Image 1 (cartoon, rainbow, N blue to C red):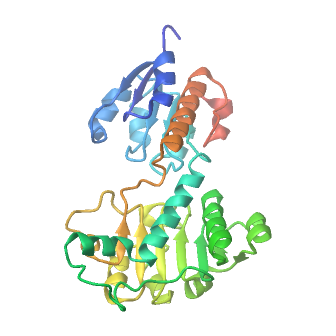
Image 2 (image 1 turned 30 degrees about the vertical axis):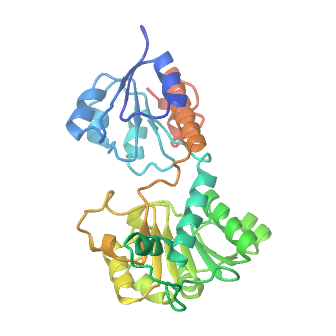
Image 3 (image 1 turned 135 degrees about the vertical axis):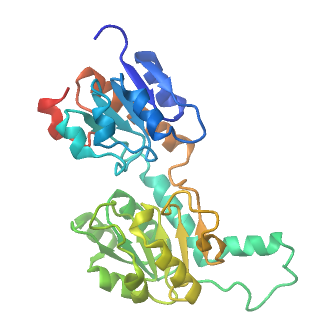
Amino acid sequence: MVGKPKVFVTRVIPEAGLALIREACEADVWSGELPPPEAVLRAKVADCDGLVSLLTDRIDAALLDAAPRLKVVSNFAVGFNNIDVAAATARGICVGNTPGVLTDATADMAFCLLIAAARRVVEGHLHVQAGRWKTWEPLGHLGQDLVGRTLGIVGMGRIGLAMARRCRGGWGMRVLYHDRIRNEQAERELEAQLVDLDTLLREADFVSLHADLNEQTRGIINAAALRKMKPTAILINTARGPLVDQKALTEALQTGIIFAAGLDVTDPEPPDPDDPLLRLPNVVIAPHIASATVRTRNAMAEICARNLLAGLRGEPLPAWVNPEVAGRRR
């Protein structure tokens, strides 16, 4: 390759990673507030050797076909459901992600949403802001206790385990989990019990979603699932919005099928400003900020950059989504 490899970065990422990319590559960085439109993205990657993408960028077969020189797609996220990995692999293109470094930040956010929803913190804050706080009320803003309750984890991976540790160690919660893979570490450390989803939904006071998004998990929390939960239960989602049927969740919150919800992700993102979910008092919604700490985002940027550079150099990616492409990479 003559000169520096050419790469396109679809958003401004932290300088901890961007500086590495700019030093080694001819980097075109999209500086817009919103993601580049599909047509712009396709034009930008047409002569690129590498691409840094976000979850907001759809990397499908058509886009990959428009980039005949592309060697690597480095996703600035732990998830990669925005990328057609099979299509990338078929074309000899490496795909990287940023796992591990956002575990604690995301688990912290999941618990933040849990306690905020359980104790009606945002609802109380808005009550005060609106000047409606007149006196101490014996029956005002009653929430749910946390100590000794039952936590249900859907997807006992790194983040699910970190959330369970917080709830078990700090609040003495009983831990149930549902996963296709048994987590012996969770069972050993936390006395967690592997159960079917129906049992988890019926018995858990708090259901926290940490599963990958795929065809088996899409809409796993639908109207039927919500009806199995306790009327005092709280749903937490810091994984992916489409795990939840949002219309069904709205109806469940409106009618008291469940007590409350705490969401860092929605479907779609962002939600329509007129979505009735946004007007409910018993839901706390954050703008997909679970990984938004300085240290975590810097670490993500560094891994993202190192994945990109390794892919350009023909080396193994530090966090390689499709290592099976190694023998036939571009």
